[in-house]
Length: 264
Image 1 (cartoon, helix red, strand yellow):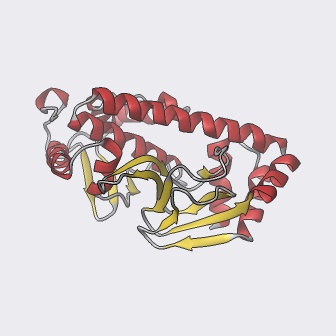
Image 2 (cartoon, helix red, strand yellow):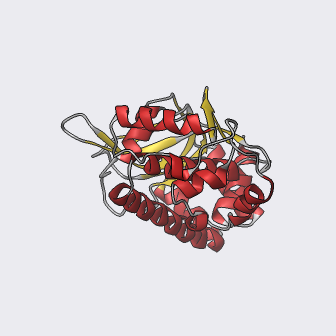
Image 3 (cartoon, helix red, strand yellow):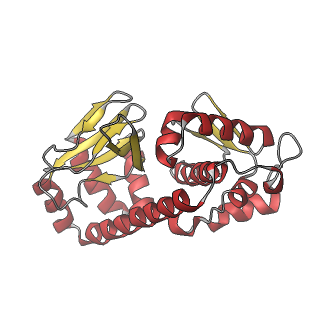
């Protein structure tokens, strides 16, 4: 598991194999586990640790007094929590989506590793820049897109991020532990809106989502529908070039952006 984790760090953060392995070695000594749907920390907890996701998916979220929740970040292997917090206490909560393995490092241990390998410090700035870019996209999408477009955009983003973590980039299906309630909490929509929009997207044959597996049959078409441009995720344009050049068309043989109502 840690070998794959080091490889993912190398891609995501742009560090050398030696630097990625050094962080993986430290993580090996501080591994923790969380069951699915379990809080990792909650709003108001001390912000004294840095956590690195080794395996599984998690999220950061805000819980409101009326019982609603807004997910503000989806976390995948290689993502880091805590290095971007400047306060003494957490101003949000984090929980697992699937079963999660994570390393919990003290700020002192984490700073010691970054001091030994200056490339890690540069990589953390890159990581923070990408996180902020994703959150800018989410704000824009929630503020200006209808329900179907919001979901299409989110599914494209999460699919691309998950695919980039796979050892083979040629596969079309990725592990996808998100539930419709999670999609609703990411996009600011009701569960009814999400269910209706996802059924509509499924009917086009552009994607296949079932049993924790998400397959993009025509990623380029879905990206066009959701006005998704992957530039903010890094250099992943070649993925879309492959889709344009030889991608499989919709299973149903029809569909397309112009045929879908964009539910509000």
